[in-house]
Image (cartoon, rainbow, N blue to C red; front, side):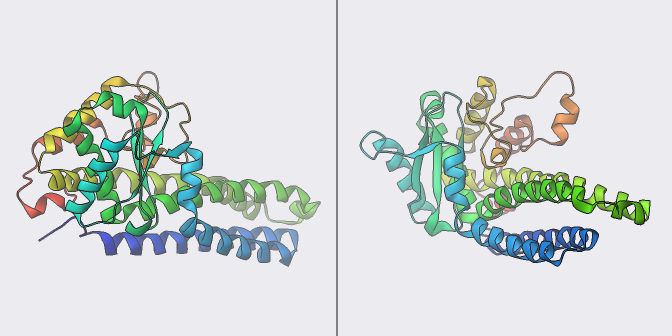
Length: 307
């Protein structure tokens, strides 16, 4: 029977695969620029950069995410009920109690981060605490704890650093091509064009991988959270309220957007909505609510993520 932890092993393997693909991509770009500039030092720098970035993304990406989102540790006295709810859900889920953080922001939202359950973090905005009632808040927190239990926060948090690093490295390599002097006149135009396209498209490819990971894991966490609380209506009502509020977070960041339970940039309607939907970090709220309200929480198949 499927459980809250069914996808742990899969997501750990996804993380290693993501880090491996990142290494190969950076080394390929580094080799190309190194060959073009006839400078082996650039390839050496690419190797060192890939290794250091992977190490940092695994061990310290949660710290980076907390800084980017301006999250602060929730005082146990001020946020006693929040701590109690997180602790009760963690006990029910068989997880260590994660660290609890609060983001001072009127936009209702929440996210989880951390490389494993022992280093898990759950963060909520002050807007979320003000908007939701107890059962709705439990639904949101169960969703975030499900991310921790499934270990898909490991994939998502590592993706924050790696996607950003690919963009920075691609920009760096593109700038270094200017050092090539007259070599571009000796190079076949097709080879030069191919290299430029690879460098320019690398950040886009990294972002698309990041988005694909995010959309799929939201359905799984919704289903797992409903299994944890045995009350899918609570999370469904919370998602409806969050969507209706339509606020953009003060410190919304494309690098961390996929970590949140709802798009921190708010609804993206109007001109170009279809194009923006292609790059959306979350599936439509209507689809998530429909899946939750039709979810047989008494059945173990409910957490398979096929909703």
